Amino acid sequence: MILSNGDQEGITITNDDRLECGNKAKATLTLKKGPWTAAEDAILVEYVRRNGEGNWNCVQKNSGLCRCGKSCRLRWANHLRPNLKKGSFSPDEERIIVELHASLGNKWACMAAQLPGRTDNEIKNYWNTRVKKRLRQGLPLYPQGVEGQASAYNLQHDSQAQNQNPISSIHTPFSFANRPTSIYDPSASLFDQNSLTSTTTTSFTSSNRPPFLHRQYNHKRRYHDTGAEFSATNLVNEQQSSSALSHHSTSIQLPQLPYFEFLGSTLDQTMQQDLSNPIDMNNGLVPSWGGFPILMKLELPSSQIPFDSTDNTNISVNDCINNIEIPVNDDSNNNLLDDLLGEAQAAMSSYGSNSSCSGMLGSQKGEGLDQFCEYLDSSSSSHSTTGKKSNRESLEEINTIYQDLSNIPSIYPTHFQWFIDCDDLPQEQPSVAVTDDNPILVEMQQLISSLPLTTTNWDNMPGIY
DNA sequence: AATCGGGGCAACCGCATACAG
DNA sequence: ACTGTATGCGGTTGCCCCGAT
Image (tube, rainbow, N blue to C red; front, side, top):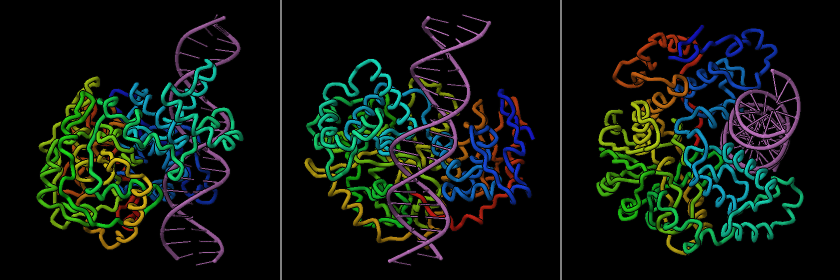
């Protein structure tokens, strides 16, 4: 089968891509390795669209992809998931990476959490390349200022570093217990708000920690929800959120919500009001209040995030997208696709901001990260998401729509007419983006529908954070 | 034009961790 | 308490591209 791909070469899904396996494979299943084909990507994207992330080992069983679960997960995380930035790092990003490495060491995942749209793999590759380059040039790894922190920390962990290769030995192992204090010092330069005016932020005060941030710290699998005690008032520091907009920032006018439950706590009017204020959803990198950076995942939520909503949160995608203003990407091609994707992302950010709201968590000056972590831990084990699945359905639907919008360009990066897959929604539209020139893309839909996928098989799929 | 080396990147591997049974 | 499974993370490797020679 050949899938039209706009102006690009058609995507051919062969038996190698899917059930090269077939019956034979069941006996001797040989999982494919090496580079992914476009057809494999398409299968995986559609699989995730239908079933959400997680249960990666079942992808092979249920989609016919001859890839191991780890490979699928990696491919999705590094290349296929929505909201990924492609291309080289901006100077700002590079600087942030250097600074983060000075404080965190080789904690690529943590660093990636501070750089929305960037993957740990990207950062790791960038850093390793940088190390090689600078070693060859005889230059210091860290610029002045940052170097001080790094060297002090390296000194502290010298013995550990000595046993490692030249590249990895330059890292600075990080733990919350013995972290370098300077980076959390509001007066320190690393995250000085004045030096980072182009990257700002939604800010929260320590007394009003948004509960969706709980999960950010729990970087391993969490199937339990967090506590719901949360005052919604003053969620967003208006002064900070509105004063630091820059040309890089994404100002989002969040939609009014009829009812909305943040991990168990229903938004009251005040909070809705706050959420309706423009929020700088830029990178979420820098605490404009000058506090410490919190390590947090900034990816958009998967459809399995144990996200609660009330039963009457029956919100259409149109509702999500309405009233959203996104002046973004001054240097990119602002075509319809980008706009739609951006709007979908914004909508998901507003509804699923448990993971994508890019705000740095606020703190009183001098408040330690340790305490915050304890706070998170203490409230992370009380509420189970089991039994709340029905409450999540509407949001999962939205997420599905979002994934539709965002996944398609990875397969068909051309000009689109957009149709929203409405398997789960009242509207009836085809799930495939059709180009002006190539309406044959419907074949993709046929292909996907031929895959041995079912939605109901995944009702019990464990949530991922 | 051919070769070589470096850069960039994708993907795999091994290990650690969390959870379920 | 133990074991198996799923997932995440960091390290490493290998391939491809491109510029220099």
